[in-house]
Image (cartoon, rainbow, N blue to C red; front, side):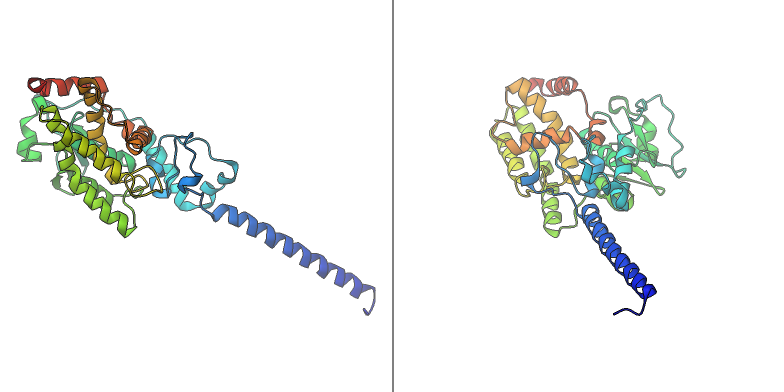
Length: 326
């Protein structure tokens, strides 16, 4: 059938190479499938005992030290540039920052409008804390300098030279100063790098705006109970939160995955929960399992944890503020 020994050898070589190509292609296909297929993050695949629901790439930066990935996930961080960027952002937000002392009436002003981006905050203000958390989540510690202000003894130059409204937070950026916490967290999202903190899903974007609009109503409803105006409004507000947390099932947060909405509510729930527990004996998580899980997951968020206050100090502060109504 063949012309001679050389033809026989040639046929054997071609057969061997064809077999090797099939094996190599099969191996690459299998490996590629493992590397490019995203991990299953459906509720049914989530381990409740781990206390961690894996987010999409945009939210990894805001989780505190997730447990070591399973062996089949190990190559993912190497094979995907976007995931690798998210991991580096985790490291940026995970750096324990040395916080500067608050500036007082005797403190000199910083060199305002010298090109440095500054975030003026108070360590105790929940509104300022929103922007502080966002800065940390996006890994902007090196790009945005914290300038804490002592609100009980604030410097005169702050109102005169920085922010005429004389409140925090305020952001000095591109030779202008901007204020209002919800506007500022959206500004950081739109104008700075780092992991995305808003989803692309139109339904989630729409719900995010609804929840942003409800933040003031939520706070006022809860604070009304501190003033002795009844607990019904506060209970209704927390029931609203529980229902909102039930809308999306792809994670434990308001929009499923961690977002600016969680940042908007976290500083207030951080303060309301211990006060209601100690002063009124009310546990806001009873009968609200979604809220309980949300608090648990938020407390694992390192970028947020760096901004949290001592619960005892928060309770004492609220006791002084609302002592006449107790």
